[in-house]
View 1: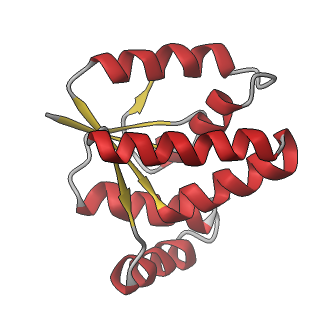
View 2: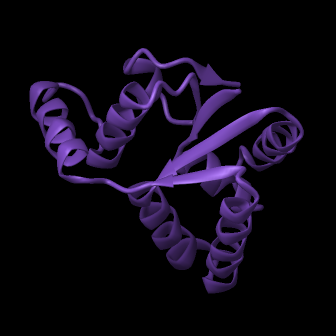
Length: 138
C-alpha cells in the first residue's frame, strides 16, 4: 500500500472553489479515494489549513474540513501525525540549516515526517516539496 502526504496547498485548493488549482485538486482527491493509498497530514498542516480556510474562505468550509477529517480518519483513509519533540527538533535543524530557502517551518516538519515514515510521495502545489527532493503528484 502506497503512502502519500497531503500538503496545505493541495487541501486548500480542494476546499476553496475559487482557487486556481481547485479542479485539479478535486480530480486528484477522487483518484486517491479510489486507489489503494493511505494519506497522511500533520497536525501542523491541519492547523495551517483550518486557519487559512476560516480567514479566507469562511467558517463553513473550515467546519466541512473538520467533518471530512473525522470521517477519513474513521475510514482509515487518512492518518493524522502529531508533531512530537523529535520531529520538532529535527525540523528546527532543517529550517536553520537551509537559511537560503524560503521553506516554512510547517514545510520542514512535513519533510521530516515524509522521510521518517517512509512516505512515497506528496501532493502539493507548493514548489518547496520539489526542493526537498520529494516526488510530487501531479
